[in-house]
Image (tube, rainbow, N blue to C red; front, top):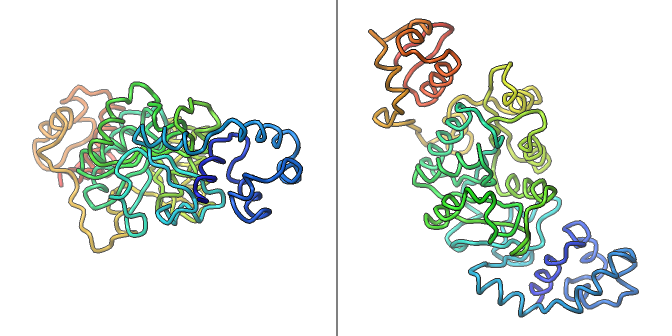
Amino acid sequence: MERLYYFAFSNFFGIGPERFGKLLAHFGSAEKAYKESFKNLKEVLGEKVAEKFEKFRSEFKIEKELEKCEGKGIRVVALCDEDYPEALKNIPDPPICLYVKGDWESFDFKKGLYFAIVGTRQPTDYGRQVAFSFAKELARAGFCIVSGMALGVDSSAHKGALEGEGKTIAVLGCGVDVVYPALNRPLYNKILERGGLVISEFPPGTTVQKGLFIARNRIISGLSKGVLVVEGSETSGSLITARYAGQQGRDVFATPGRIFDRQARAPNLLIKQGAKLVEKVEEIVEEYLPEVKVYGEDKANLLPEEEKILSAFEGRAAEIEDLRLKTGFPINRLLSLLSMLEIKGVVKVEGERVEVV
């Protein structure tokens, strides 16, 4: 069965999507390539890799290893399988196999709306709130939120999707049975409990390695219609995801940040390069579902700090300096909270003047 050999190749770390593609082109099938002589494999892989592969296949028991996966509740979706996502199949370097935790069959990768939200592991309060709020409202509008389950923006996006009663997909840079970071164990469990998926191209048991996280970024963008970059520095991995998105023909969106904030550099740079600047969830929804109306946050669900700001208004409008004096918030915190209230559709900020909508 051809898919068994896709599975076997995906377990050998010396052969990635690019080399695997060369093997398929040269030998015609995964099974034929797997069973080829060392001499013939050497022509495609080179001597060192062919030697390592020769040792690997002499020890790797395909059916037994597949049973181990299934015994752990891990589904294997091979590139040759009919249910392999078409969007991912069409990227330049599709994963040989996907390892999946969760109810795979409940996802429609042909008709579903998949959207990625990514950003720094060290966001500001504003960044966390933007990721959470956008994910929540997009989930309510029918989008499935895709991210990488890292601390920071990724985690906020997953949590927002769950709060919006939607589904979310976490793409890992390690095995799907390895929860990283460990602090996200509750989030990992909640994603699965609420009908979401945890996906990786790496076999179970694969531990965390830096290069694997870079590779997983192309899956996050590849599964998605578009990618929103919330916050990140000039060296942020979110820029890599945005670059993959551009190469794959996906839409790239970014939320603007203040020019002196280091974590605003990635989204501001992307906007300069042509990414779509977004300030409201509606601007994303309209790209894909123009008929859907987004109503924003329920004003009854405001945070205590946000309610304190609203209580400082004596009428429908106020000056920012007056709000600072009445609330006692530092100016940076006040501006961050006002930005979130504006995103939620509660206030409108024009210069130094704030008006309750």
